Length: 499
Image 1: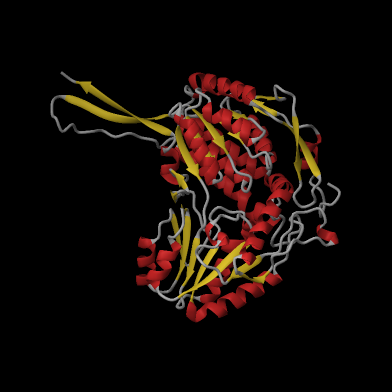
Image 2: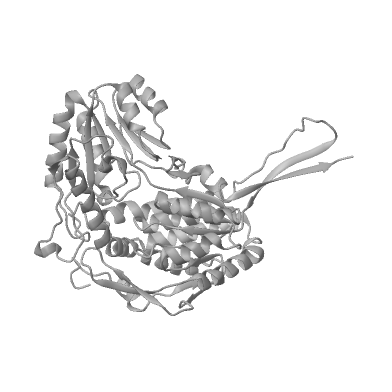
């Protein structure tokens, strides 16, 4: 870690010293095969940790542990005690917040301000939110339409063992989103973090152990998505799959899960439209559109990558966006003044760069950016300039496909009906944004947009109580809110003859 900026975090350095093991049945164990992979710092290209690489044999061990815990200790744990354990985990995470922020930045390239003030506090709040739900899952008393002297009711019960596969762009938050609701509902969990960003999940495993969760309730298996993900989705001992990632992988998971009829929640890709009308508060709209695109290097599924601007203010908006992009500080994510860090990997950097080159070939104009940064301070890292494209048609590759990087497509429009049609001209339906001071315009667009979340005069705002999920090929089911925990339960109907 010789190129990292600022004072090193001694707790994190100590954590990284040994080869990281998997967490199965309450113990830290090497993989059955003994294979090891390396975790790289995307800011420098250096190896920061070595991690045991699991396979289907390790998944099977984790499933056995999770099933035994579900049948045994966890099913006998009261909702109140489940709530206490989740609260304790939240308290421990909060007390170690700086360690997690530093490690997340080191491993994933997210800016330290984002991890310190966004990701870690968000994970703490999410744990506490679902800790409250553990004691509030209720059924209903049902009056029978057929009459008779019967007492009928429903009750919510956990599904069993859940295989949870998390993304690389939000390592800690993604893990907590896949952990809190199923645990609160009474399920046991097998976590499969991304091979590229496994470290904060493993560090959270230490806190899970410290909090006193029974053995086998939470298990962590590290390794490639191809081998472990396939083992999880096809394992007959797993009842539910929760996955966040690409639409292509999500389709594969859906197919494999069908053989054992697993329940699934899929949060998949996006190509979100963000619409600025001429009557909007342009200062707020431009700032919101900029942050809605370039936060976390554009590596966000809901990023407002397609920006539609009403023709009257198109030049004013694009000029301001270009000015902001050119002033944006790209650099080491551990520097608190950095606004945009590196992309996750060399491979992803080249993929994003290729999209920019294809856009040029298809007639797009690069208003700013488009270049890989390679000066002395950034050597070895995966840095790309914030990029703004225009002169694009709806059929252009950069407009149709999810780039998952700092590339904004800006396009003018003239009429509300036109922009609604263009905004919906995508296979995705994850999120959308609308900027206007007209309630009539806002509601007309809200009702017409095919998206699971629509922001009006804001962007990227989320809340644990608000369900989050996608339409069309952006997913199945929802996380957050009551719907997020309901997805990890099943309904049992009870009918008692009182005669």
